[in-house]
Image 1 (cartoon, rainbow, N blue to C red):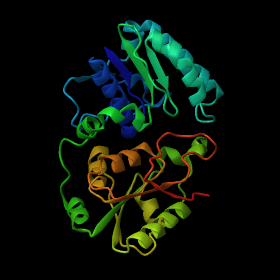
Image 2: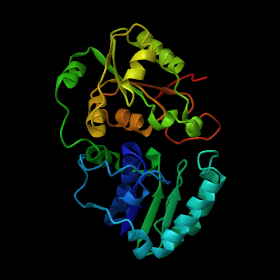
Image 3: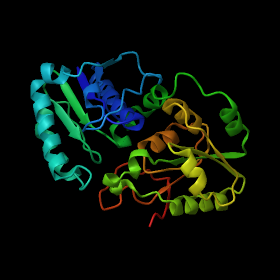
Image 4: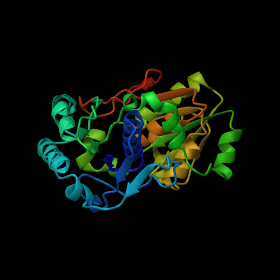
Amino acid sequence: MIYAELAGGLGNQMFIYAFARALGLRCGEGVTLLDRQDWRGGAPAHTACALAALDLAPEVRILAEPGFAKQHLPRQNAAKALMIKYEQRRGLLARDWHGFEARCAPVLNLLGLHFATDGYTPVRRGPARDFLAWGYFQAEAYFAGCADAIRRELRAKQPPAGAVAAAIDAAAWPVALHLRRGDYARPENAILQVCTPAYYARAAAAVKAARPDAEVFVFSDDVDWARANLDTAGLPAQFVPRGDAVADLALMQRCRGFILSNSTYSWWAQYLAPAADAVWAPDRWYAHTKRTALYQPHWRLVETK
């Protein structure tokens, strides 16, 4: 059995699902996602399982039993805890951990653990009866071999309806602009404060130059702030009231153009959109030299400094 512990919000959980599901398909094994409710409000950060409204494969099980890994996967859990503690003490977001994690991967895989918070680190299933995955797995390379299945399973069970969906469908060339504030605006998360109003103004200007007929639909966890601070370069803009995370993501997927924030939620919107024509993204994901494997070849990068 392959187990993976959920962490973070919807975007991160979708990457964890995609990693575990792809590994399960490759190895012909079942997958159980562990919903760590005991991590809520603590570190590692976890909100709540947000996957229920997605069209997940029926053979993927979600288990809300906080002590499961410690009780049933003691060796893997102990190694995971040591890795988390080591990186947190030295600053999980303060440095690029990919090289360190890649060097540790062969030994950890033999123990039945894959640990990857940064970049793409290939996984080998190893001989352990049960296998535990912990990390964020933010790279398409983890599931590229079964991308069609992942796209199908990570779409909302219920397609969006209502006035916003109708407006997107009626627009000549709808653009989803995602602006994330929330936890990103906290002083301790300065490394994530990349997508400034100036970035969005440059991105909107680039959209207008490419598609003068574009109409912008703004999705944000702080719509009032977005309305007061965003410059859409004269393009008509509709500021969408914040709704359910899955429903808003499904609305974004109806668009043809995308202006991304440095957020996995943005990433999935453009990845799952069946008619995506163009994506404008920040030219850096972090405020320092920490790297990411999220960039895709067709993205158009916009200066953030």
